[in-house]
Image 1 (cartoon, helix red, strand yellow):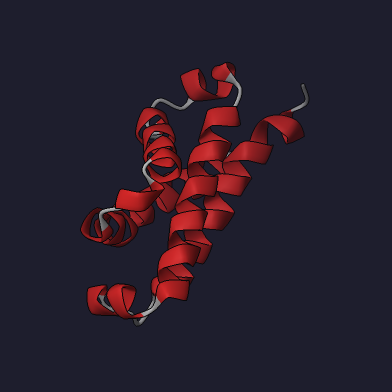
Image 2 (tube, rainbow, N blue to C red):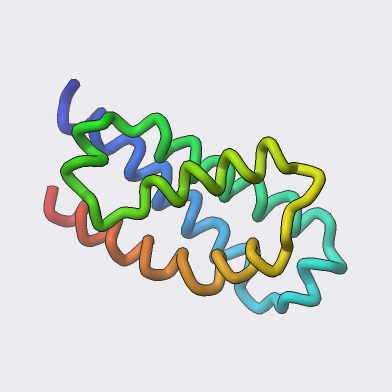
Length: 113
């Protein structure tokens, strides 16, 4: 696998994390309750982040232990399999607290390449 292909999943994670933050920008937790499209879009973006993490080659996951691989994959599984019981507080907290540091780490990794 080439270096470009190794970066493929990292770029997917970065792109979708940035898109989730952009969608949530200027919104409140109450907006998540009031806007079904926002809820579905943010949920889907986090699912994609988790799926990209799951599909990242093991050597990439081992190389970058500072990325929360297991948590992203677990979140994806929880959102997919527990679609009928998504905790919006957790979803909102992930978007507000966890995506910024993730984006920072990914940008740093991809800049080094």
